[in-house]
Length: 66
Image (cartoon, rainbow, N blue to C red; front, side):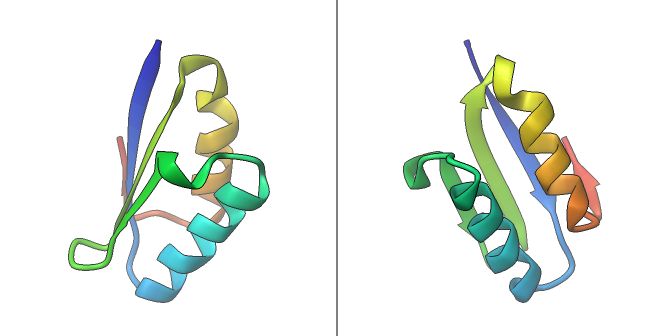
């Protein structure tokens, strides 16, 4: 089963860095969505990968994660 994880950050530069980290970690680009207007990253991933994705997202100090 898949889950959508949403993280909000405080800058576009951070968004770019998070996307790069997720893709470099092996997540397919089509599963990572960046919204510069809301400063959010949305990741669609299997529940088994949720822990690793959350670790990457948390490295960049999100304002909010859900």
